[in-house]
Image (cartoon, rainbow, N blue to C red):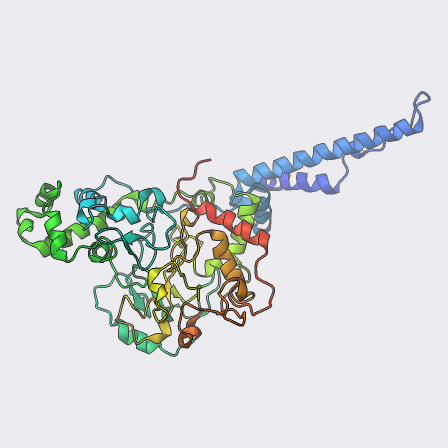
Length: 499
């Protein structure tokens, strides 16, 4: 005797299959024509009955099949689950995502929020942390400038576009070699880098761990990973001459003593803090870090893709195809670096492996510093960090950013050379297959490839991972329609989704 669960599973599938393969009563031949009805009319009547009955049965079978798939997706075999996903846009294997717990902000985080939005802490009196990290723009810039303007009179151009501050709550400290995780032991980065020198670069493919992920830099904050904590990251812009432009940390301390929230410092950290400038700054930056950690807007996980993972939203055909290409190691292969799957314990994907890559993006002439032909921004090995300057195997490498809210950004890559996703995708697709469409040309008309990195470091550039593994003249990895569908999927990563 068939079990109830088996019959419940097989009935809609059988109904759907039977509609396509087994005649029903509706398919029965028409009765012979009567004396009052000519043969042609009888034939037309038979065909109409046949078509109407066939369509009704197919529709009924499909409806039952789709309804069952939506209600009991866990009972669908993998192959059938793929059909359901294609037909309905639903995730046939929904998961439960472990989002950060939400609670009212602590007193320290409330203080940090006020500091984050306080323009009086800048030399110009017109910039706060939120100026370059706008909550309304996924904690990134609110404009399309390649680099932001700062300084005492807001007339100094920055060096790199500010990365988003969102989704940094799980960022590990900078390391080379085995993931250091949460460790109190000091790490000798230079020694680890020296040990890794000369080792073959690991090939990274979508949905698969790289062969040797420990042999590349990983973790850290800023584009070059030079800072490990949100607390230390917060102080950097305050004293940067092209950003908030305070001459020294002492200047920052004097400004903090004049704020309207000074009494909150005293209540939380004790009245003696006003007499200790270095401690005052340290606690202020700690508070900013707590705000970024506790406030759920920094890691909302409210995108359409999150809800799709949980079975609460459906992707369109274009979005589904874009996701497939995103994960396809021979096509876009985006997931090779921008991990798209939840962790085994249900943590939502951050869409970054937090590693560093040398991609060879073209030089951006809009950055004033790039007007000096001998200046090169080489990421991990300088010029804004100097501890790895001699580890030239990392020259040209920059942190892989999260792709969450990527469709809300207006500048892309470490030098802000592109301003829309289409150009970003064209870069990956055409960098080596048609470089004349990506790079400037010399006097002879030849493309000057990798023009933002000195030639002696071109060996660091990734030519192993798809789609960057193609050669000149090869067919690009993605068609125009593929690119449109990938962009459609990327738009599902924006927070604030509403059906």
